[in-house]
Length: 367
Image (cartoon, rainbow, N blue to C red; front, side, top):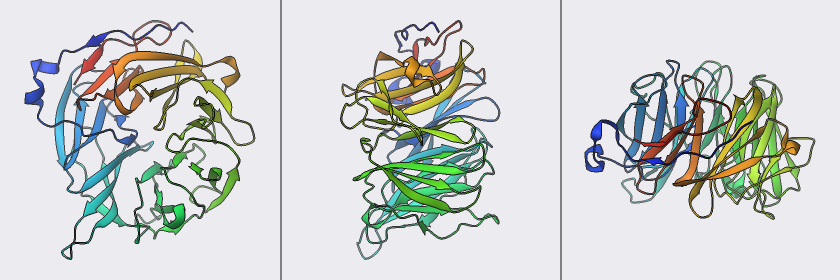
């Protein structure tokens, strides 16, 4: 595969808008799939902001023009995770902070859905707090192929808690999946065979929970004496019914890929402190994985290699763009790789795969 570095920054804003005219700015970066592809072929970018979230949407499949930001008010929203299912519905999970009349601090997990690109989302529904005497941390989720939403959060002593939809569409009660010592969001992944798996870094190593069958109970956790840096674990399906987990190795500081039954494969690169963005996509006729993260200097880094072919090498490229948190990756309506990031000024930027062989990005477009 031919690989070329990303192009220079393009600071032109759509329709000539100034930063002041854009109104609100992102206050940080969401977790999960915060760059999504809708059923109509348009991309949408989501980011948290004070008092809610912001949304930018392509005006046509493949861009390049975007509308937004559109502000969605969510009072008390302190953390935002975005999850998309195979049906393209976008699910928002949040950690909400409220102050009851007695002055105490209340925390709960909330959920909403956007069914179609560019349209309003549903009302935000409270899913309660699986850790009533503490803080559940940032909720994360996965949507099974049948559309069942799975929400994971932290419980007492760092156990993994699950709340999911029942067959009748109602929500089950919180389930205690046990485990302990989890102090950062786990990495769930929905697999094509209908199951969901979860991997988390814990004080004792790496913990894995596996669903026995679609809609079934979760077995585990199985513990592995591996050294994953907390807060860096990500997951992707790399073969039918098989997940690969990615993290920063706590000892070497380099990226690693791991599948059940094997040993972690070193991928190189500099340390990441947030979960890697992972995208599986064809490049030059090869089945490839593209990863992105923010390095210790604050710059975005892009990497690529063959899917489940770690021994063949992984290639990393530091990009001349600083960012908050972790970047996002998606394919647009024309099948091109798109990378998004949130700058230190709270303004998002996107760059697309150029035509031709390999993976070369266009100039950065500021939204």
